[in-house]
Image (tube, rainbow, N blue to C red; front, side, top):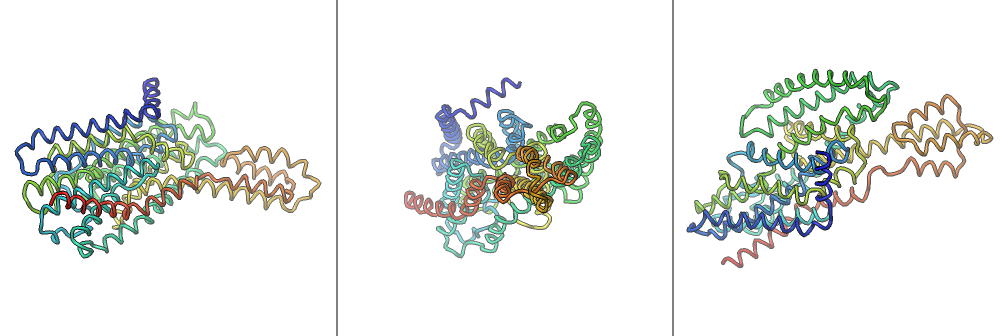
Amino acid sequence: MARSTGLLDTLLTSPTTERYRVGFSLLFLLGVWLTVGSFSQGMPNSMLLMAAAVIGGYMAINIGANDVANNVGPAVGSGALSLGAAVIIAAIFESAGALIAGGDVVSTIKGGIIDPSSLSDSQAFVWLMTAALLAGALWLNLATWMGAPVSTTHSIVGGVLGAGIAAGGWGIADWAVMGKIAASWVISPVLGGALAALFLYVVKRTVLYRKDVIPAARTFVPVLVAIMAWAFGTYLMIKGVKKVVKVDFLDAALIGLLAAAIVYFAVRTLVGRRAATMENNATGVNTLFTWPLIFAAALLSFAHGANDVANAIGPLAAINDALSSGGVVTSASIPLWVMMVGALGLAVGLMLFGPRLIKTVGSEITELDKTRAFCVALSAALTVIVASQLGLPVSSTHIAIGGVFGVGFLREYLKSNYATQLHKIMEHHDEDEQKRLKPFLDNFRDASVEEMEDLLKQAKKQKQVPLSKSERKRLKKIYREELVKRSHLFKIAAAWIITVPASAIMAALLFFTLRGLMI
């Protein structure tokens, strides 16, 4: 299995296969065109439905290429999953989530951002939804090419807003709803980052910073994994399986609590068995989070497929209903063929184009080990639960990326904080003792964040000598090393900010183009 996934990793990342990726995606879209054409012959506007189906498939491909990376990226970056295994798991669970729990009816106007009653012409409504779908897909394609993970929900929201304004004027938009969506640009990453950093700090204080990490791990790791089990159990009940069973938050939380209890005793037994052979360091603790990360990647993918497939099939279902009924619809039933376009498109996009964003999320923003990746996954589930109960608008993409940045900035803070303490300890010592400083500096320069606390304790005990002015500057460069790549921070933040206006402008232009061609 390892050999086969290694070969798959090579194929997924090889630049020579780029033309094959494009070719396979075009083959999938051709299949959508022919399939829809085969059963829509004789129907009015069948060509328009076929074109809309292809655009819906294109949108689904781009959702798979961009958005799914947030679910599996941390697991890949930490080494819990190989790239090939992550792609396979995500493709299976994304498709399963879309088909099993994707819903029978979907809102055609995502988030209620425009008032469809302002449109009396069903043809204009069809052009609006087609333009919105194509604009969202084009923006996602561009963002994926730039290596920027963005919100697919915001992409389609921007498309509907721009095309809606083009079709019905500025009054068609609900600007209060748009204000909430704009607020999510800040709320989502801040909540996700704060929770991920908080959990990582708790893990460090309760386990990793202890002299004997094995007893600490036996006590606290089962608790942490049980919290994750509760979060995912609750999350799946209220978000992931709404088509299969509908429950209120209290029932979902109780089901999550039952899952947490089962997982707690199972993990406690597992950690007890592993303790005899486990290394007494952070590496040993990291191995305990491998399976929780794999399950988290699968469950996040399932919930994402159940929820975000609507970004591709919602407008397509609306177009299908509008062409069939000849009217403007605010909610539409989802035929099986529409759901299949969305589910298969997600899987195709992920397998062909997803690896690039998976690498960005998993390893290019900051270095993730299994403990950090676990905290990111846990924060993603908890943030969605908290936000949904408080009525806060959030984006799953922004939450996950915020979590990655959160753990990276915490690492920077801890490293800076430790080094600052070291400087204060040493600054009053005699310069004649500088020769004793060199071995300490050598160790400090090579130390990991976790090892720096031990060095500080040694400095207190051994009364290490002070640093000269030039040496202090050199040390500052070491402890101020950026553990989070700022270039990615600025690029991703910029992409988030312009997602709605960029897709809105493209959608408006596409609406006018379509109307000009069809009239």
